[in-house]
Image (cartoon, rainbow, N blue to C red; front, side, top):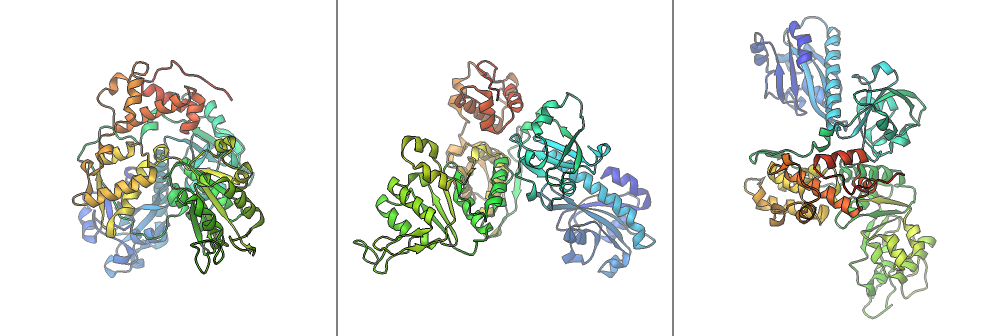
Length: 594
């Protein structure tokens, strides 16, 4: 803003930054003419929304989401016809408008077309702000900067794509979308880097010499266009940017309520976690293909919510979504619940009989939760139903044709159950058209956002809420054995008992307040993994949690760094830097080359 203001200040302009509701947040204006702008209403705190002031630079730009000039008589209100305003929207990395940058003059002469230079400058500055926001937001990821012309790489107009350590594209800026011919972030986000370009991101990363930014040539696989690209090395200090250091207890985080009663969409559930974004991408590709989906993940990780979101995003959305928890129905009843029965089929049966969940879901989606708990005899019968798309209700020889779409879920390792003979292999391959792994809450990279969303969704009657940063940090650091379900219950209770809609540390459950990340594990390895001297007494809860999580995963991997890095979703280089930062010594490390 300061750079732009230096270019336009001599022409009598004020530079303003406003939020999406049209409220001016900050200004750059010559003190000698500030009174003129104050008199015109162009001052910090003033609201310039279209709903309040009609057509004007800030409000109309926020509404139309494009660069715009509102010159003199273009304004709706007569008292504003002396103003000439050129504004451009500022987007976040997901394409949402988050602010408006505006250059206004109270005494501009000339035509509306004469303001083209000003609006071009404002638009270029807004793009620069967006680029900086993107690079800052994804500084812990690998960022590809690319353009048709090599001299434009690493400049304002190049495209940028953020790639997680597992090779999944997690974000793309607007220039990147435009260069690749994509309409929306969802066209790229969740896809593997190697599915978009004729190269692997890790090949570039390994080739980056220290202190240099070479430019490579590559092509996109959809159109075959040639690009020149550079890879931004991940700075070590960026890897733990989500961990606030020594926050002041009095710091408060405001959360706007989310009064929506609509079901959560796939995008809502994916959040910003790379694994969930990849699940989102694959889910979209198989929504209407008739491919069976198996959701694998711990209890409470949101498998049923994800299955329902898939149903609502598909062409079957207008038909029933029927969920069956195979673990909660008694074994003696699960057959009748699934397949239905005729009148008088057995003692205690309904006089009119029952259609059964499979028939009820015909044309829609049948969700079989905890499929691993289904008895073996019923697995055989379910396989036959899936293969023949017809059901024989109990007590009748009548065949009922069905149109099934099945999504199943399990927290168990079904392959191990097959090896033990407790799950049919042929049914596994019938249900496992594609497996989507739902990560545990403790392993998700967007826990901060999930906590805030939970507060927003649980805020009663649309009332705003807030949380002390110390309490937020403790929620982020907690290991959440009950996963997302436990988080929502915790947030709901805290909002109910807190005073003044402010969640404090004292409002959280005792086990969360007293939680020390894997204290026993840290103590057990104290002799071989001493903490760095500079962390003594100063490590935040998030840093302690990260250190403990690293140790736990490495122990489970028998100190095989390749295996541990894969489980953590990190590159080996990133894992080594984290071990060094947390003072975990190199003894016992084992390497596994692929």
